[in-house]
Image 1: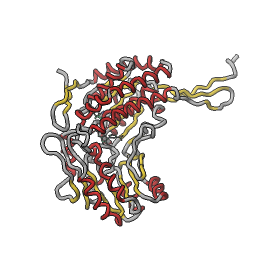
Image 2: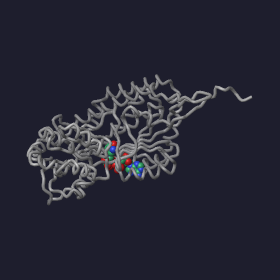
Image 3: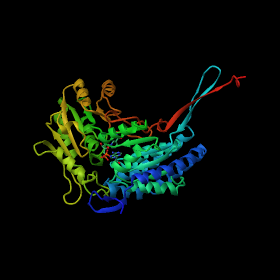
Image 4: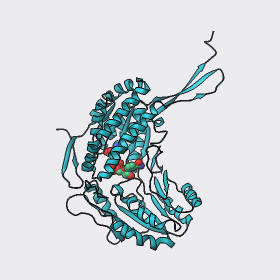
Length: 457
Ligand code: NAD
């Protein structure tokens, strides 16, 4: 009997589904189908490809509630977040569809002829997705790759294959050709690894942990495979004393508690200028206690469970009883629950202050001045996101330039929009996704010179 993936509801620990795990042979067969489908897809008129992708977007929209409910069951996401996630897939498909007819090369002046560049699809693209945002992250790679004329093989995380499988069905329903977008649920070390090592897969878009990302890069490099990596983060939320402290304290909880802290952009290092520290903490306590943790299917819930027992144990290992701070409430009984937790008095070099916990845990660290704030913000191997709270425009710009991270926001915590570029500095990744250049990342540039001199006599 084939190996099965067991999908659990993280809020109840009940089995939602079992799904056969793809083997390396399944990956081989999928590459053959995808290669065939890709040549037909790339040959379609651009307007036709765009039309089919728009139809896919409409089909996703028609099934938005169903997809969202499936995400609640398999990932424990709050229903409000899950609806946003399904909507994000629709929007990504629409946005990418708008790029198909705009995927233009250049005409470069040269003597003796005409020089043009052509952006050609890569072929078959492997997208390896994590469990924390199963739908959006799958679509970040898939939508622009398809729009640029590629076929896509998507390997969802072991714990969250269901929405990905449903998206593949919806793609067929919308009229996308068989084999063009296939989902291969399976183990990272088997199906994921087979994609990385397959010579027929031209590019890997990997989102996940930094440790596995490094392995993917090393193995992919043996074939000079194109690799994009979106990895971990330990992002700062820098609050200067001149900021609107009420607004900063009100926004701080969900900046690290959204998706139960299982967010690569979570602002888990709250850096507060010492002169505003007491006031900030006075406001933060009630704001944390006001966060509703519970049944993710309930519209009023702010935060659901963690994804799995493994993740729960990992988060617990960082929060020892000797640490001071604020602890919110979480349900007891079945489910992978952990309360909102803010730790104070932590050594800035402690594990919990520098490693990605990937749970609802933040540390608050005081700083004296701008130079110390920047030094603390940069004192991590990661460089994904961050926020800066200040009323001083010059300081906002100076600190935005000084913090080594790919996605910053001033007086807010927003970092991900499908039409702006996203990606990490340092060990948070390589390459960028989303934004105006999203499709280009799935092409090779071909340069063609056409002589006007006529054939040699
Ligand atoms: P993970 O690295 O364990 O797994 C990610 C994916 O890689 C899964 O599909 C897994 O099956 C697969 N995989 C595992 N081993 C593999 C191998 N040897 N070869 C190929 N594929 C393999 O990460 P995770 O625990 O699922 O996800 C959490 C991590 O993802 C966090 O570190 C988080 O910060 C990161 N993340 C980053 C971003 C971003 O955009 N930067 C977004 C979301 C999550």
